Image (cartoon, rainbow, N blue to C red; front, side):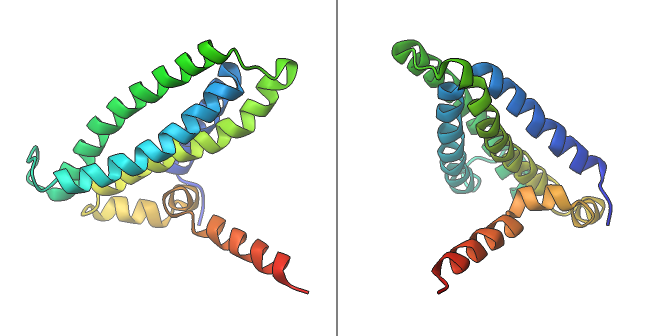
Length: 164
């Protein structure tokens, strides 16, 4: 199992988001991370509920993907504006370390955003056998979609910390 073009795209998107986050600073990146995580969860909830009401496409999976994309773009604009306003109001900065702290936070933010991108692709191409094969051969994209290895590592970490 090798790395596919989808894996490379996911990695490039994560690095691009982390680079922008490093430039933006810690406060904006933290607000964006929290906003995009909870905004994505809220958008997912709304898209699944509205997919049965709003019929932009005959396929319910594609309809949910379209609704998710539209609502998530709206939420993204709100999050970006909120991050900017909070940063302007507080003028919070870690001085020289600000960009160094923001980069790892940006990696987590990038993984969160790429998770939502891969989720939309999975919805849109759920019935396409070539996409299913691509996902099966894309370990990075599959991990960013399911976070199974990450969840397993966290579970093992807690088991280790609880052991005598």
